[in-house]
Image 1: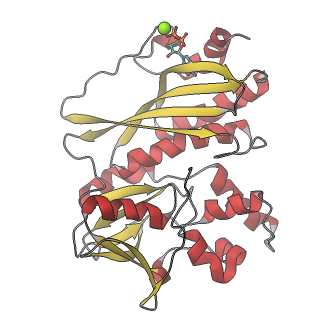
Image 2 (image 1 turned 30 degrees about the vertical axis):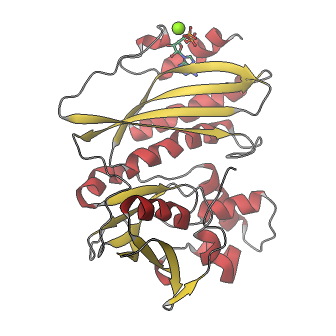
Image 3 (image 1 turned 60 degrees about the horizontal axis):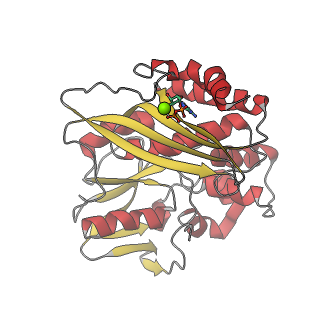
Length: 307
Ligand code: ADP
Ligand code: MG
């Protein structure tokens, strides 16, 4: 197989409107009057963001979803993506077939299609870079800057499950049942970003960020961009029963500093209800603090860092 066979066989069937069946040098995105095009990119690498033994279809889903969470956090609805692959020389047809099948499944789930990309071989780790495109009504993209003193802080979903799954893959000892273990490892392999929540989010949020490096670290981005202080009330942070079973007393501290959640943290007026949990408040000052029973808990390492 050369790269043109790979593109023709596995990726051309995923091509969307404007992609010319992946047979041209570039694709066309038709302008949509009254909307802004929102663009984001994120890459995942073997050994850093997924394991060599992960199924190819879940690797594909993760590559897409880590981008869809960025769009969702900005209040944008996704419609297309580009796919940049650095593949080992020895890549197997079965792997590519499963990978393309995972892409196709998520294309149907999220209503997106493939517009193009690049395919090359590497001696380094398998790396998948996706660039995703979404639309928001003009001027409506939610920024990290925008949190106001008096806002409440909310988060979608639950926090730390993917981090728990990663810990299990790294052979941390645990007493979980197989079902509990699988719940956590599945969340690490396939994040569940709240994509369909984007349209509602942009009506209510003053500031938002996707939680990828750790809740405390990512809230720190809102705090610094907005020039405010964020107080997280530890008791309110949503933790699953599985995660509590895994980490016991340490669950909260580890969950709020683990990455890979791909949920959305945002600030908005207090008193709102929806598919999210209130976890804190915005005050005057700077930084993020975690409080339990009103007492501040020191956080040595607020999130994942590459360097
Ligand atoms: P170039 O000659 O500019 O290097 P390529 O031969 O890399 O172009 O790509 C040919 C076509 O195939 C382009 O439309 C490109 O977008 C598409 N393509 C290449 N790799 C991928 C991929 N991994 N996923 C989707 N489309 C791809
Ligand atoms: Mg070309």
